[in-house]
Image (cartoon, rainbow, N blue to C red; front, top):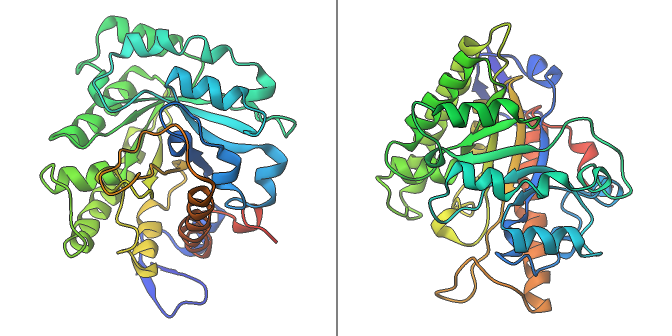
Length: 333
């Protein structure tokens, strides 16, 4: 069978037809708060204005909240940041102990429902997910970790990192949770997977298209294998981290990827197990800048917003053409 992207003279070989993919449940499109820096001191509303269109202003920006306490506090309390918290991402950039992370976000999990469900917007019945990197978990899981995960009321997600063996370890952890019947999923970070495939090294523009093919091969194989995990006790799901920022050490080289390569991506993720598409967006400051910042000049905020509209907007358009998402709910009219 083949997937035909509307308006394109190109067909992509796929296991399911375009009609079947179009009828699948649509994933949530979510924006990471990593764009606001480690202290959260950059206004999300200005950085992401217009990226998701009318639904953004009506329901609040759907965000994956980086669980740095200072950033979370600033973002949730600042009147300009109207957000709909869809997930909590464990602090990154260093090894994070799982138990410490869970204890550390216990107060965040008590955020008032009107904030979790969107300020002044429509309510959502699904609680925000809790995401941790695989390195924070034991393999096999300890009894204490199993107990903590089982008692969570939030969907639990494992994310792969860029370190050697992380991809295989993430998949192994998901399969262990499946045997235990614990509701859980995997968040596939494309930049981390690309870097691991490249031996842990940063990639350059000339070699990235070939690395992209290897990334999609691994994604396609994992997505196809999820059906084998499903049982009466366990319904697997997965999400995609799309790091599209300018901090290239932890982002995709989006300027190298053309429309056809994003259509290949759409073909690889077409599945009714797909639940989340998350745009990460770390920004570089200066020639040797860190992605961690507290504030930005107004002209930089406008430039980042303009880039977000183009880069994220183009990816969303292609995913809509290929039946992965419903674009009318996302783009400005």
